[in-house]
Image (cartoon, rainbow, N blue to C red; front, side):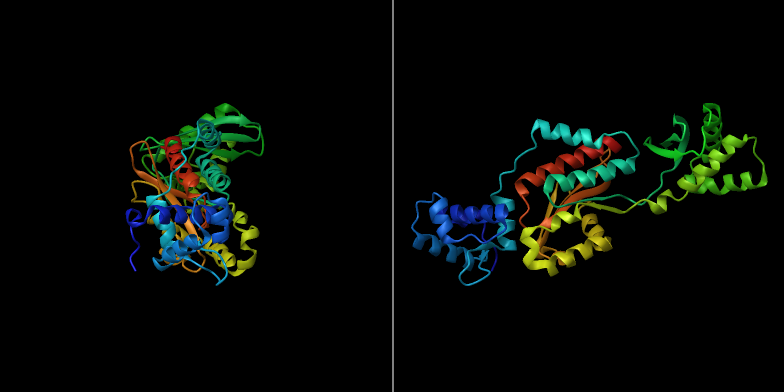
Amino acid sequence: MPTPPVSELSTRARDVFRMVVEGYLAHGTPVGSKTLATEGGLNLSPASIRSVLAELEQLGLLAAPHTSAGRLPTTSGLRLFVDGMMQVAEPSPEERRVIEQRLSAPGPVEAALEATSALLSDISGAAGMVMVPRREPRLVQLSLVSLAPDRALAVLVGEDGNIENRIVALDAPVPQSALDQAGNYITARLAGRTLAEAAVSMRAELAAGRTQLDSASRDLVERGLAVWSEDAARRPVLIVRGAANLLDESTLGDIERVRQLLDDLESKQAVAELLESARASEATRIFIGAENRLFALTGSSVIASPYRDREGKVVGVLGVIGPTRLNYARVVPMVDFTARSLGKLIG
């Protein structure tokens, strides 16, 4: 049976339906007619409430897990609520400030992506996910700056104007003159190549002794090549944080479902494919339970949003995954704002 639009529900059916859904999202348990009669302020008798619940069940919007239990929203019911009845709660100025502050902490872009995933987990109480493209930019310049006796900062400028920062570990203090020499040497050999491509010719020169680098600069170049040339292959496609949040009291009776979900997150490939499908979206997308093949068995929902650079090009996708009783009204705008904030940071 096709799901009816909200406009076709009577006023009392909408009121009862909303209370059942909001009760389920808040507590994760069925909502019974007694609760609705005593706490709902509906001005309906228990008999009238039971009649409305039966009507909503016939429409496929609610279901009863047991004969004597209350009602839960079905996947169709949650979709109707999310699309037609939910009132989102936009992030407060303080929440926006906290999000922007956490994402803009100093460090390389990978650290920002890790922070984003952890932030989404904290916001939703579920698991946060960030998908990044597996690519290595073509570079035009590399500069090295001393941070501490055992660390240097590499500043990489791409052909597209993007800038990335990476930390290089040092065994011993290196003078800034050696850092400058190593940076100039690498920059001269980039010529629109990726670091991995330029590394091939640089290693050949170093092995053949065809350079004028002093020993400190040479060691720095070799150390950097060992890290940078493998960066593209090692850069994660999907970062997941907060999976432990999926194990709470409400899941104790359904451990097998949660185990399946954790297995899906561990393999990452299927989840990455789902997030990839959100790349073309203009706004945040919501995948509820059995609407998606991947989560048909685990009864989970995904809220995903693409994040773009300053030119509007999609860079990746971020989101959260959790039980279908996610607080959609709060999490959806939070995910959307986080996506826009991350895009400004790395764009």
